[in-house]
Image 1 (cartoon, rainbow, N blue to C red):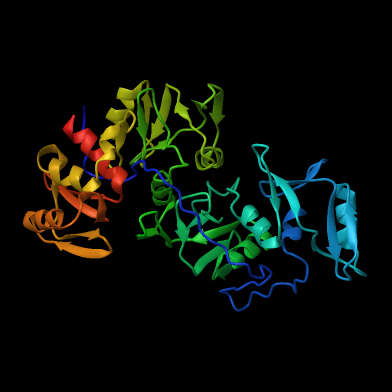
Image 2 (cartoon, one colour):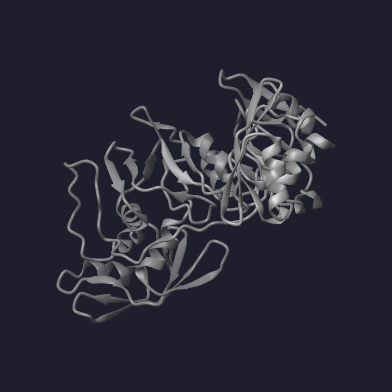
Length: 405
């Protein structure tokens, strides 16, 4: 087996962490540009977003379809029943007694046909704000600044660190100080992007800075509900200096052939948790525009091995991961597994332990039950002059499996 140690990132993990959204008025907009003056908003801003996403049987609020009929409330407290798009347009056009919100609870259906009842505007707003943008993933730069399509990271194992800076395609700038303000901006600003760098908290509680789209995917691939692309016998959680040449074909979990035509389709498949299996041959393009055709897993490995920055994981995680990560790491270090860089820290029973050498580690193991001892990440390792970083227990498990086989 080939072991690629140089960059120990982009590894699979399990677990999920949801961000919270406080119950607050999502109509408030906070802007960075003092010249930006939003229209005075009285109605729920989610109504504005529905104007542009409608079907004959439902109004589409992003990825949430609200089927007819549904009720809305007006400024005077009256109730209006909406049976069609025409009814909705009539209701929001009534200046004498305008509609201001839905009558809750309201039921929405996602793309998989799963129905959810939303009890208030905050719950509905979080569902809308968590929708994966269906466009913008191919807009690498605006005015020279790196950007990333904006949405709540609720379905990922990441927490946004507020305030966040945002911009639109016209160069307008905004600031959101919490989830509610971000939801409001998503509902009122067309094509909204995070301005990078962007800070997030990963599942291990570490603050990580995203500086480009590749860095975002690196973190997303670590989330249990995001499955990296796979070949016949491997998963690839990073593509180093290469990008796919579109279009190319993949198989989904049901064996259906799907053609991916651009970055937007790729993002929606991957971030929605779909399993995709690469179909050969496919083409990869490097940063200089050179195209490499890969015909099987080995061709893919050989190509990726030329630029580093990736990790290929073979097969399922086995029972090895049942052992505490600190035991796995300390017993396997040395040789192909690399050497742990001291100092690092452990926690045990709420106590933080500084580990400056193997003697400190042995003393900790002698003082506490082994199953209450946890590594404090990140942990650095060195191997033949290269340095890698481990960010969670699953990364330790995968490394140890790979370097001890």
